[in-house]
Image (cartoon, rainbow, N blue to C red; front, side):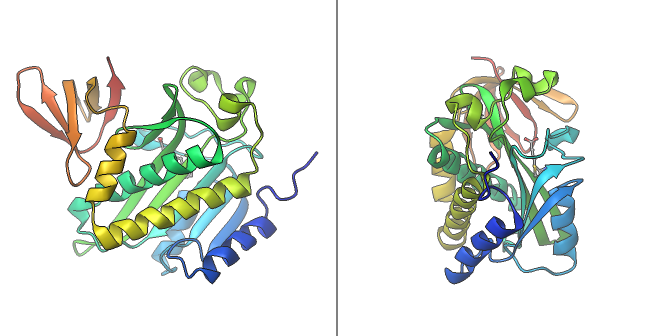
Length: 271
Ligand code: BTN
């Protein structure tokens, strides 16, 4: 049976109405698209043409969904959430990593509100459940005259994908809320939880700065305190993940005792 309250123009308009009444920073302007290459592309085009901060694009399906480090993002119709949020933070560009860190905290907490699961974050922003990837965040930034013009936060979260629907290349490493709980989730209400938490943590960032987000991220982290391997550009580092700094960069104690600050990369937890 089709769930008529699942993702549709109507359900998405109702979400926009809810956030409008509350004069929220995020999701007062929200658009549903049944199919697009990537919601990040639509959000970037809207942002470039001056859309208000907090504009959200949600799609039922992406034809060219993309992930971090040039990877593809599995984006079949009728199953998951693919959304992009336009932010215009008053943060110097060199400190913009905190925006992605903020988004990962919001998505991990929302995932735990949507389903009874234990979500954790692998640096910088992979949302993991039982060691498998549930959701990912792709932030794309536009800087002009050393100022952030906009950041697009792209969120992909596997909701109702069944095990036999996962492509072979991600079968062993990915999960969905359905795979964790055997329950089908209404995607409009899941989107609502995510946007609610995004609002909350973005306000927290604007009002109280980075520290509360860094603290919460650290509590949710699967990375800190672990022996890890990080592929960063052409380099691979091994050592212990000690902390993230106030910007969200990873501080890693290398085998020779030196402390290395990592701004981007792919982490493998060794033990
Ligand atoms: C990752 O973990 O590699 C990031 C995945 C981000 C996927 C989302 S889905 C919505 C938005 N549109 C995209 O093309 N990518 C992001």
